[in-house]
Image (tube, rainbow, N blue to C red):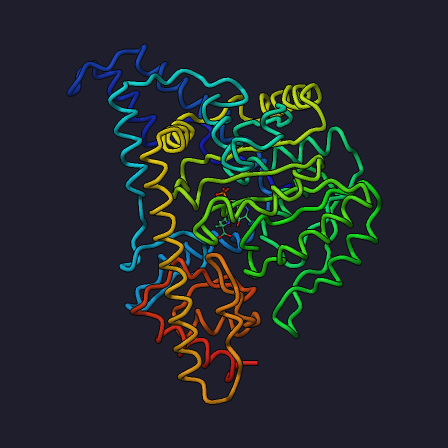
Length: 458
Ligand code: PLA
């Protein structure tokens, strides 16, 4: 490693002379005493000690690549073109393409302020009222798993932090067990399991030929995995494809997982945001729970309550008995304590207030339908524009069939780069666009960009 001693071995000569002259003269603007000179000299000696080390102990650290999703927003900010569009990160925007804070969130915060709640630490497992509300929202309050107290719930740092906590649990208590993830999946899944040192492999999911689900491939890959693997499933609105199994297919997936003694692991990041209904979007999870299976479910309130930066979510582990659930919860706490000690309180209180107050809860459902509805509208408008403008006869109907906030356009890397470089449309390089960042006014422009990139770039 390169090292260098900087030439500052003592006060520089002109400064040294200056100090001495001042001391001899005894008079200057301020009286300069011998002790001042000694102090200055000592301070320079200290500087020398500090600087006389290698250039940097971190010199061998290379530059990390920008994040494939969050890095897109950074590039977008730097662009000054008036038609620029940020369709990278999945964050809801209004028709004016502004961030949106839900009215129910503002009302809940007002209530919280009026009550003058304190800022004490939460317990390691989080806010009790939140944990109760979140599990009930997921399973339904009268679900057997809730009534029999078979769910270990811990508040997590949104969806990502909750997945990470579950990954730590797998690493500690199922060492060597594999997690099966869909191909493709949300990019951060691989990072999460890599960092937790949990081995993973992919199962087939997306079929580019049909622009639909490769159901047979998915089933045979889940069958081929070692017994007792974890199978990561997107509860609804699969990211990035927007393609979900049908209810009948979910039953078959559950059959195979049961046969193989696998453990289902759901990532529920879009409950209520996909269809506009909280219950409909939780039906996959409830189907598995109704079979009496043990399963893991990570939840996020980033999208459905717009609480992106509050980092509020949960990890739920459904166990075969309340006794096991209690032990699992104690271990989740043990894993969380050295990682972040205890979770933040603000978002947890918002969720608990919204879910726990019937008026706010109803209003939330309306706002969620409004957000889901706006996305459905731009999806339809984009499809209409693509169909009207493209004379090649290409079938764009997949755009309409996909659900949730994304559309998986099928554009390859070079075509996606053309979208950004030529059209100022920022998106991930896998061809995914977030329709939550699109306005009706920009649908035609986006259609032009997609048609150009699809037909003129290979
Ligand atoms: N799981 C899935 C499937 C997701 O799409 C996301 C977010 C998360 C979990 C985690 O979100 P959270 O930690 O904020 O709760 N995916 C976003 C944002 C919306 C991101 O990449 O962080 C996306 O653009 O894909």
